[in-house]
Image 1 (cartoon, rainbow, N blue to C red):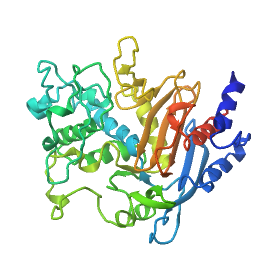
Image 2 (cartoon, rainbow, N blue to C red):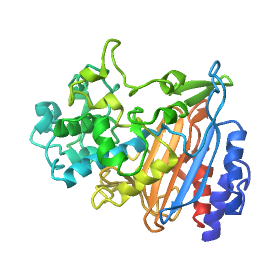
Image 3 (cartoon, rainbow, N blue to C red):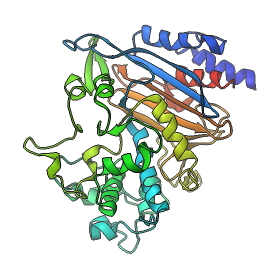
Length: 405
């Protein structure tokens, strides 16, 4: 069975050429270089830790300068910060758990405590929607077409009857980005601090990360060398996020009306301002630290929802989701993109980037990986697992090889 799994991982089922990945761990950097050199992604990187020590770290490609008029090419390294997409949700959830650990936030309190009837399901007014259900995507909410509000608007301006799914809040799972904007608003109202600052104080700094939501708190030099996210159209790379204008900016990169000044922001009015659902800028070692923190929390990684095909208690997105904690996604060993290995962490997919950060508790290991752009349409999903695709599959294969699986 081990040989069969190794063959699957190293061959990639022919997606990148038969058995293109090398057999020796020391040589695995070559397949990342080959992935970038073949042209479908502008940059790719992988970091693997075991027992708190880095056992593999390599990146290849360009962080920026690929677009027309984009200036000189900039190299992409494992220390390059980038918008990490939904891996960002781990930082939001851990901020909530830190406040709960300190007795400052009751995760069982209903959202109506802060929003009144606006966050009571109109079809089930007697059913409370607790804060913790936002983190496990069992709140009964679903994403509206737009789930971000430019400053100085209020998050309540996004609320509508259409943001509720038909079923009763509680046990049904439906992945919802908007829930994390609502959660960030709750965190602001509890602490009296802007979300980006409270997340920095309680989670990012303690984890040793020089990271921040929408570039908040990221050192200027790290921001200037950050990664632009791309998609290739008509053989040319197009900027989807963090082009030169954003990377050269000062202060958080927020969505706001032209005359708005951040110092005038009313704390607690709009938790979507710092893109809690996907706007964390961090590098791969940062993500290893974040996912280790989340996975070692006593409550966050415990299963809060497990798919039950007998009663259809959730939308799995064709097998993308099967188990969820209060913040982390969970892959059981029997349903994992690293076959046979239980994983706790999160995937990310947005603006051309595909990322992942995972703790493997049975191996005391972390893996973090990313590609920062794609060619054309969404890449084909891998037979390895629904969450893997043509470009991330070799990174997952290399992670397995580095862990000597």
